[in-house]
Image (cartoon, rainbow, N blue to C red):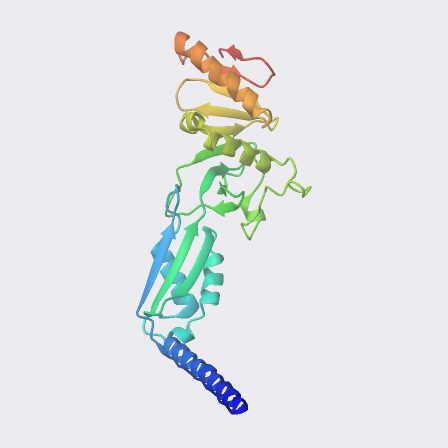
Length: 267
């Protein structure tokens, strides 16, 4: 009797598992044959200006997968769509997925430019928060810090526009001008006062940095992108206890290159 019950129990579980498998199969078939009812594009810009729009993404979708609305979900290659969107220079991250109601979602995080670089040939490109180089969008302009002057690096030398200048272990980028520009820009961007005060970074013939402020008729000689805490501490102190009393247009040059000194002059 016990043996018969065991056999019946085994048969029951086999049928149950088989039934569940068939049910799952029907559900999957129903899902993959379900037509795409809508495509929803969501773009997160963070604190950055718009560089990529939903219209741009729509164009990529059309070229990659054709008309999506009405197409069975099983015929939509979400991996291929993600790969195509990832090739867009302004995209930091993308996820494409479906839900059970027949909707296709495209979620994108845009890169955030920190610096616009204008080199000696007047070629212009961006440097973003991760250290990647980005092209300038002819239709949209990011309102960011500008660097110009003795800059030889060119965006066109890096056709993939994905150079990570933070790879300091790589001798190609170690102590390079772009690395130091990134370091200085990050420092300025993450300081509330400096972000509102510094408008431009100029690279002189000695590959040293000069800062052009928004308030005041002077140039700040910074030198190399080193000892930044100390240099800006002295600048803050001079602004607070010096220029606030004698006037912000008193000097044309404020030199903070040298340790423990703030040297001011008129030209």
